Length: 131
Image (cartoon, rainbow, N blue to C red; front, side):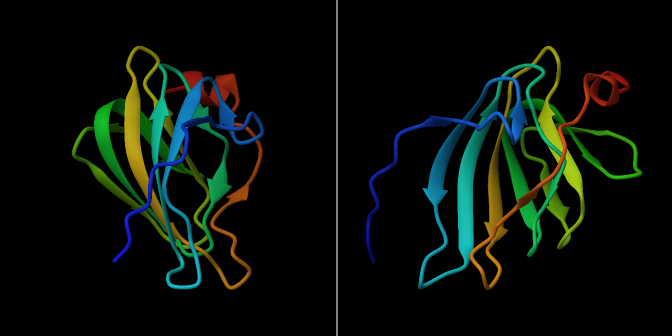
């Protein structure tokens, strides 16, 4: 067993997020496990870019109200307590409602090269506002 002291909170990078997003790493993949986990907090209207995960992703919404959308599908509302499972390489985005904060735990595996996500283009304001 080991206890890992928390890393400092960081802003989500602008090439992966729109708006203010705070990321707290919970666990990074290492030699013992390919699992990564982060607590991600979105301010109202903030969201990820389109992206996919080589080994899929599980989100556990801890607070607030938000949205999740996969390519070619309708946007779905998510709330505290919801669990969202995306399959490997399923293109999607997630983020906060325009008037509410939203936070989730993001759990994902790393591929053989250590990649946990492939980031694509930003979700446009038009895509986001067409909820």
